[in-house]
Length: 507
Image (cartoon, rainbow, N blue to C red; front, side, top):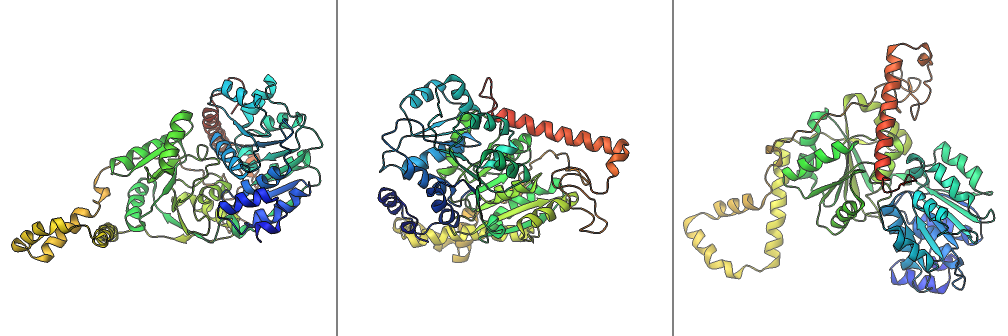
């Protein structure tokens, strides 16, 4: 469906046309008319499917530029996503002269206060900083018309639900509420009963959650083998712009150091980094100064980066929803992408549950041999040579080339040149990656024995086990509970680090 069929105003259509867009994405085509009718909408859409424009265009159309009050509020889980959303809304609304302000932690609150005093019609912010401004009375929502909960499942995972509830209490009950989420776990659906009035649900088909444009593979390997296998895959697959996901901050740091030691242009982001450092790394990655970005799930929340060709799950995610978010960073806008997930022997149940969620089987991938890696290195060298020949800019080198031909055969010269321009075998540089504590074989989201005879049962998110043997007590059950609490504590610790810019609220 074309944008001019959705009932949008001429000034918005002109902006869309200048941006080069004609066809609306499925989430845009289905939600925009509903929002323009004033309905509450639940949209299930993965990052990268155009959901910002899906809610942004109707909001911009309904903004009264003569009204100096905040008319729309977008709640985002992370600072990065808040900034990206603010920038996109500003670009879409430039012809209508709509003012958009972003507020988030880790930035000068005084500057934000001055920005809010300039009467923006749309505010985009993270939960903690929005609460801070509400408590300071520098943000007032009594005239709010539209409330958007963006990446709702991410905010649930990051523990922001209580903050969101407090923000919603400050908004008029007559508002329109829009909720967008890549996945719809039960807690999110329960929230809709509290926040929304007779919402219309627009759900992208499950096969679109992990787009057909992403080729999904898995590699079975032991933990200590993964790094060497991954760098050999780089030689074979020749990724251009790559995201690598690690389970912990330590893992991200070690992977980043290891990649740098082997000559790759890589940086990492996680919750311990300052906001300034995180933004600097993201700018380098988006600007092509880096080829590899290593990240934890928490640090990568809400990142919207175009052009990612490959996603490597160095550690399989601890919950299947995270997998959807991870690989959704590639295969966008009709372009192809590749995801590779490393699976240790005790994590096969996790792999199968991911496949159940995405309704798509991952293809097994054998680790490249040394010969295959070498051929990959040489193919990179060949591409370099072909590009230089096509550039036809080597006339001044011909006299020296003729001198070489007098001393050596053409085969010797070409072979030497090919060796010089081909990447070295990175695996010759030793790198030690500390093993992570393995995921529990019986807990987590391992699939139940009822589906896979004889397998270990478990709930989707580590809840009650179907066979009920946890009720019998005993040391093994106590250890499982200890491991569960420990994982929760570690995850909570990282989230708190991401939100450490606040004195009072977790953002």
